[in-house]
Structure formats: C-alpha cells, structure tokens
Length: 209
Image (tube, rainbow, N blue to C red; front, side):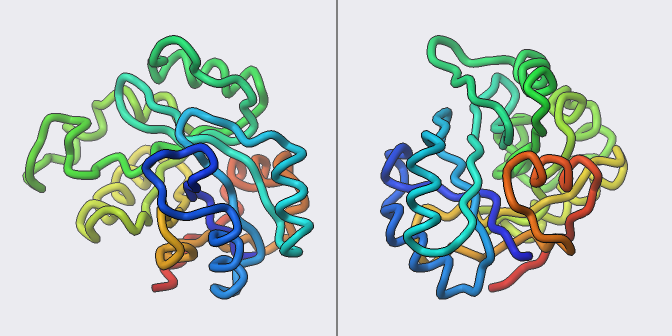
C-alpha cells in the first residue's frame, strides 16, 4: 500500500494552491492507495475526510503539521489543535503519547533555519543534540520541498537515533502529490493501524518522481 503522508490543501492551509478535489485527482493519477491530510495546526473533521475518500474511492487518513518552538512536527492520532500558543516539542510529544498517536519531525533540515545554520556545514553530533529529535518517534527523510542533501542528512540522523524513517511530498500543488510515498506491506484500514505500522517501523520510503 502506497501512502503520501504529508499534504496541504486550500481547505485549511492558506499556503496551498491545491483544492481537496485537485489533490484527490492527482493522488489517483499517481497510483496512490491513500493520502494523509496534514494541514497546518488543523485536523480535518473525520466526517469530511470520510466523504472525500468515498467520493474518490481512495483511503484518506487525517494528521496535522504542528508548529513547535523547535520546528514542525507531523502528528497522527491527535485531535487537539494548538489554538492559543505555540507548543514546545515536549508538550506536543506528551499530548501525542497520551492520545496514542505518533510524531514525526517534518523536513527537519529545510534550509537549516530551525538550527540557525545557513549551509550544509553541520556536524552530525550538533544535529543529534537538538531537542526536537528527543520528542518524536520518527523523521521525515524524503520531502519534495527540500534538497536531496537535506533529505540525506535527515536519514543519517534517523539512523543514528534509531528513529523510524518516513516520507511525504509536502504537496501544496497537484504536481507534487505522490513525490515521496510510504510503502506498507499490509493494508492500512484506518488511522489506528497507520499509527501502529509507523511506530513499529513497518514502512519503507520510496521516491516516486
């Protein structure tokens, strides 16, 4: 089963130029078996996601890209939204664990802005010391919005810390949908099964285009 775990639409992400229908059309064209809606700091209503999936006969999961004080984190299984203040990674991790979810560091080296570095001259040990990685279950190692060097560096961090590696297109337009996908050997029927598969590392990352 091939799933894109990181997508934004105009429904709840002002930075996106892709409507939910455009996203679903692109996902079907890309041969995906499922997609995950990960709007910025907003979780899709379950009923709306179900209707969208039924319309296109494609599995639709719900997640969220949460802005924290140390970087962006993809979360699955959390229904609470950060409405008032920006959460710390520690606060977010606690909430995700209490909800039985999973947290993934999203594009952690995009421009290295999170860490105050402007180039690729970062020592691996410096990266490992960042507290963001102590508060996630996995790392996004394939993202179409960052460079290959940044993706490869994220993979090195994930390997060094024994964190699960996942991918996501981070699509904001239809052309990017399905760029980075996750391959699950078993059929994933719902978000609980998705979370369990990620937590157990039963996922492989594949670059599609």
